[in-house]
Length: 283
Image (cartoon, rainbow, N blue to C red):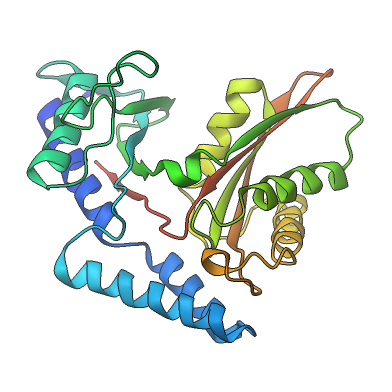
């Protein structure tokens, strides 16, 4: 078996590049979803708001400035090939150095406080990042950078259903989560929904679901249909872009699932604003 050595300095460089780029340029699938929503929106005020969002996204890209003032807490997903060996120092320290470079040198807003309860003093470099790792086959490393703003993060929810819960119960919970959020998460939102696992696994699944492109289709036809049902119900709420009403309360719902215990059915909803930021690279 051949082991591939990767210097952590490469990880640091890629992290710095990803977080700057993710904050300045949205994925094409998100831009397309907003454009399509504007064209199909029956509420003229809502269509105008979507048009302004388009202009803002394009201006950020051209001027190389953040799409939103909340440039997020740095969430990093690493899919690490089991044939990879990192050299040159600590992997987690390299990731945090990359985040610091992105946010300090890239002049992105610094939003992380050192202690969540007492003092809440800013770390002044947007670290530490929230790092999730997964070991996979091969000798590659996939990095997903997901800057997560908290106007939408604060609207997220987890519910521990019993196995007797039906599909309609889960749709109702997801829809109610969006209804309760109202205009707070800067709709139209994108939702990541995690179903299964344990309490924390469902939340993690919902976060990783936000790394999917808006135009991809769930490979499981049952869950692809469930995503559509959830989206349809949410868009009946008439919250609309920025809360002004209309057909477009959500752009997309993405579901990730995992096996669970016979006695449980955890469901998590991670809410993302219309600034659906994520970017990845494979090394």
